[in-house]
Image (tube, rainbow, N blue to C red; front, side, top):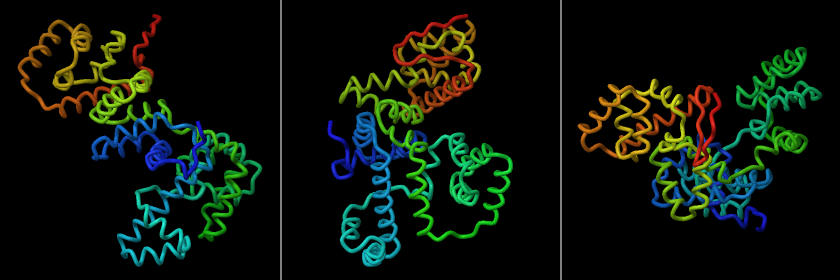
Length: 340
């Protein structure tokens, strides 16, 4: 397969790369709010099919989105004439025309943003031999939690000096800032490349869908099943969906039930298969299971959106318990053995 370039990539591929770069949490929220029919499924397939993106190509994609986003803002605030004037000053006449022709939404990146995706411990080690003023400049622009982690990994005497320089720092010339950023990105490429070069694939899509609401998750997986059953199966094996309750051991099911109210459970079980329902009922006391069955029987017709909302909530409980190590779950059709 030919290597992707900015000119050979389709707009959908660029959007897919942007979603991966933004991370699963943000990407899932964006996909949830895409209303155009078929577009969400198409983007999901693009993400799953996306090859590795080099740091240089990803940077070009982000710069293109940034330029287009700027143009959109200029149009909104001052019209076409104002937008053209500002863009011509920034990019030249020919490029301004191209930008105005290709308006789409995008993301603005902050100086040294590439460091936000690197391991803080590695950066702290790498920064120990750098000038304290330079380190202070970088930390002043990074996300506070990332800067704190890096600062904490520096030698004690250097921590104090860097912190002092951050406090005393004033405005930095934008041109100087861009030049420093260019030099550092090249110098520390081995530290920051790893996360940026791994874009797309079924793992990324599964991680995004694991954070999406139930309706988005189901819609995408159902349509992927029709378009590419093999990809759909690979994604399912990497994520947890409500129906995967049947793969959870009984002790974990009982732990989950302690976090879920009976009325929410009854609504979530409406319309699911007998295997899921039976798995839940057999892990409840005889009295509780009888009450739940009665509640479901007399509940009557319910809105699909309400069912999906409760299923999403229960899945979030399960993922939280798994993350804390209180339960273990298997994904897809894998049958993990649990050793007492």
